[in-house]
Length: 71
Image (cartoon, rainbow, N blue to C red; front, side, top):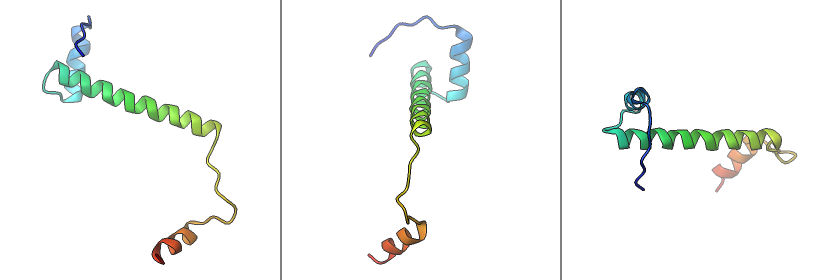
């Protein structure tokens, strides 16, 4: 998608510096992709904080290892 955006030169320069992109487009793609990954992780962390994972009674890592080894 082609987009026209007015962004400060110093912001673009800093994004290019830290992203290691070949050009402005590549730098912005890298920065936005990384931001999106982090946003998804934050959302998942919030969800897990509200509703933590609960293991079944009697669950142990040792039992699972034994099951996997015996297959």
